[in-house]
Length: 185
Length: 185
DNA sequence: GTCTATATTCAGATAGAC
DNA sequence: GTCTATCTGAATATAGAC
Image (cartoon, rainbow over all chains, first blue to last red; front, side, top):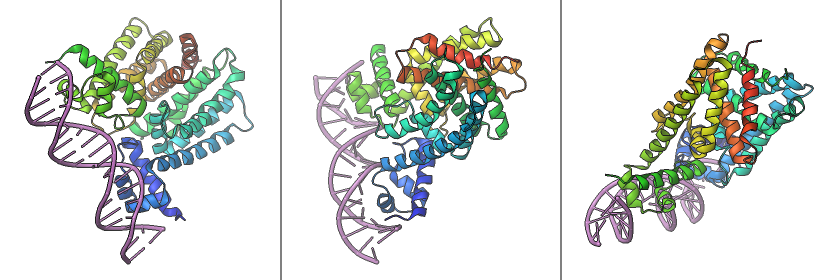
């Protein structure tokens, strides 16, 4: 019940198209065409178009959680934040389609895949918030986590979409500069 | 050739729906229903559904440019950045629908309204970049502008969508803390 | 300037051959 | 497990009465 390579083919094609045009504007016909399979095969492997997006989201959140967690391990304060940010930027670089979909969907509520999107938010923002909380008890940790995640996400996508010739280090330097502002004077 | 109140009605309804569901998932029937007019009236006032989105974008960019420019006027360095960020957060608060649409569309290329979206990017990121450039010649100004804009946008939307009970000052405090990182040690 | 009714295209999903 | 063919509902846009 499922050939893995076909599923990956479909997932990659769908991620690319949804990132570019959005979920509703992407048809299952388009996905099948790009994946090089027939529409029937798409529905053999996934129950519905929404299921495909859920799978894309879950694949992405797995990778993001994994890399951010291990970047954080054994560190705290600014050092932890810098390594977590670097890990997040790597995910944006390697899974740009996922990052674009995330940016497009995080602030929409009431959609079918709200839970999956919430899991990504949780994986990213909350992890930042947990590190920031003891550093800056004067700030709302969730808002601060959101601001940090936002700077990473937008800088990372700005880089990949409009300035991809710049090196990774340039993006990291920018984010590190902002993170430095969280260290108490 | 056009009754202004009807146009505003349609624009507001469309902005709310597109912010929540996305452009393609929002039908002209939905827009007409929410605006309290018939579909024919929508097409009398706007040439197409895409034209409606363009109008929403242009209304938003006008407001954003205006407030950010006047916030910047006569200031420079950190002081300018803080006032510009505050102005941007105000726009996100007062035009949350517009901000959500912006977040969803900025990193998509090749769509019909790419130009209008580009204008918003320009209005926000470039203005930040111009102030940052002389402060931090060691950083890529555009990436830094993007990171600052991203932190403002995501923190602002995080606030409006998930923590709207917090006061404006809490969001501003978070952004100001990050901006402080741009001041050379 | 606003309405109802309709033409036409296209989407998601299923059935069943191979 | 993958294909083609097809059902069915819905979407954009237009025509034309009021």
